[in-house]
Length: 147
Image (cartoon, rainbow, N blue to C red; front, side):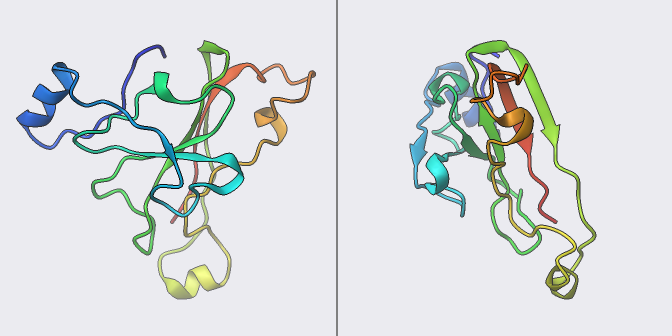
């Protein structure tokens, strides 16, 4: 993954900023979205001046990346995906969370889905503490479901 960047490009000035490296990343805890600051989750919001550079994300920690723009969950909460760089950045475990069946407030009240994008806990293949986990040193990208 190296120095790849996740950016939002709205017009040519965004491209110029990216090419001239003015789109620097700031990965900060406790900013934007409901998951920030919870369980040591860091957050990064992509915008004209913030590219959420992979190399700025802490190794073995979760960063929720909020791409901004029109990406939202069912009730307008920000959509985000989780990135957890491992020590082996050339190996990637990419997971799309399964969805539910929600299309309005009433269907979400039945708990058939998730209405907000929450980070995955470090369980199962995402548990870096288990010596028997063959993926523990890999980079994780998880895309949570939020109707």
